[in-house]
Length: 603
Ligand code: ATP
Image (tube, rainbow, N blue to C red; front, side, top):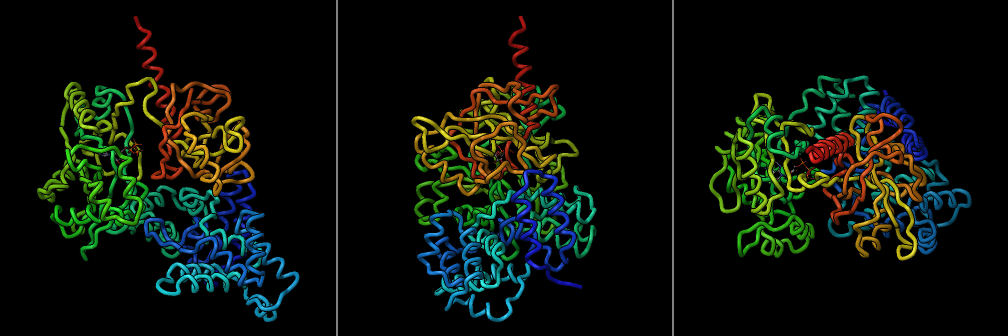
């Protein structure tokens, strides 16, 4: 049996995905590709489609800057570097440059390039195995002379590549494959290709978010191998998420009369793993490894948690070193600058407020009800200056809940998290469900809560905004269809600085037509692959014939739109487009807002 796949197969699918505006076409193409891929390399195909060598949480990076990529193109094709750079200035896409350079050299032939030397011999056909292994070798090259080694490996790969192959390899290398093929899209394709229940795959993905690994298990060992995938310290699990409500009474009703309520701290969510060998890893809400930014927190948990091996969860909050009070979430951003982390630790100290435990000493606790998990959590936390359990109460009384909420707000928190204590109150990985309900301060204003929406298009500005975008087209996510539905066009809330940098920030996502995962009636001037997430407020949610959000839930050809939308200034870089506010949430916000209005109007 074949154990590799010619790379040209993947390229044809990439071309098709890039050209189509129809999701079904994209889905079909991906699933037939996976169907014909030999099990030995299916993980490599999946990683390539997703545009990264390994799951994001492993943090494997190629480390080849654009400039060096251009050098590799020159080296492979014999085209002088100056000419390659000029071509890049003209085309603005290193992938296109690689394609053209290979074409030119194929048609003319030059002297002196590796390309010509090989050209005279038979060029080998590239396979995904070869492409992936070379890219991995680029990522692994480190130490002195690493840059040269990386360039040489890439040049040699491009030497064997056909023009379109060179284009996609180059885009992959500079991190701009950006096809909008997301994890959920691959899950659908796998389920279709292998005819297995999507829920089974999704469950494995929650426990072990590595689609390459899941694809391989499925292709080699079938459903049983997928079922055997377990919670593993060192591998992030998908975080549990909360629904929202706007009154203590409703919350208690929904939770069956009684709940554990905790401060909702405004910091950074941390899923913290300690492995048997003593290594500590901290993962963000997006499951990125952020251990490097928080060496202090890693040390604190080593001291404060009494277990050899564990996975716990909490919120890291910036603290004012002089007063001990909470500082706003933005202060943690100073930790993102990797250099000078020592200084940042002193200037922006962090406390950790733990709220859950998912694994201790070989035991997966995610299926235990919350009260049992809390018992275990309390039993392993030792007194520590910087680590403790989140402030909490257990209550069946709406007034007590409201008092606790006000207490949280005045301490500088966003509100409270109310959690079910029922038998079934498991740690529900990757799900936004009613076991956790958030109650935030801004829910009590007319439009409850901010929304996190995805940029899918833009309109050019005029007058003062000439040369930049005047407004952005934003969409909400529907996990059921894995598509994005437009909900507003936003032009306010952007500072001059935002406006200046937006075109540049959005450039990597720019595509010539509507993305197949975007459903829109509007035709913006520019389309984007869903990627950037912005936080938005607004006056209210109204019905609108212009937008597609929730149109299947309403009568007539209307959708829901946000009236007077405004950018809050917060770029939600901690969220993937699939973490954006969902159409269902917008529908619920619309309904609860109607309820408020009706009660307001009552005599
Ligand atoms: P938001 O946009 O409101 O921050 P989100 O979409 O990021 O929410 P949610 O699950 O809706 O995620 O809200 C829960 C978030 O609140 C968590 O991601 C976590 O970072 C934070 N948080 C703060 N305190 C707690 C707590 N005690 N329990 C759970 N989450 C908490």
